[in-house]
Each structure stands twice: as structure tokens, then as C-alpha cells.
Length: 86
Image (tube, rainbow, N blue to C red; front, side):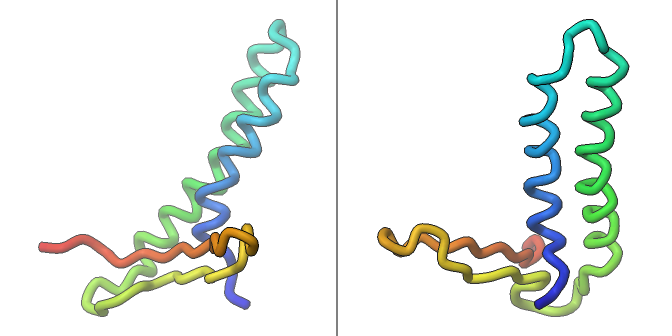
């Protein structure tokens, strides 16, 4: 299994968003640090993907999945990057 870089980009900010409402409102600095720590992995992964993306190659890159998510409804978790059209 490859490193789930797109999953980390997608869900690491979500983890921070779940934690922040439970922090004390009087601790503004703590809220800012948790937000920074939650978004840094997404930024680091985005920079890595930017430099590792092969622009001359067609098709999907950094593919994750498909994984059954809600099997009874045939819903799957599937991520990938295909680049932009010119």
C-alpha cells in the first residue's frame, strides 16, 4: 500500500476542526497552534505533490482506492489527481 498522501491532505484539517471547539475560548494562542498543527501536514503534502506530479504523464496519479466505504449502498472511497487541461 502506498502512502495515503491525498487522504492526509483531505482529513488532517478536519481533525483540527474537530478538536478546536473543545478548547477553552480564553486560550487563543492554543487554538491558533492547534489550527497550525492541523493544517501543516496538508500543506507539506500539497508541496510534495506539486513537485512529484509528472506533468507529461496522462491519467490519474497518486491514486488511493477504491475502498468500500458504505458497502450496502455501493459507495466507495477513491481519490486521485489527473492534472488540468490546457
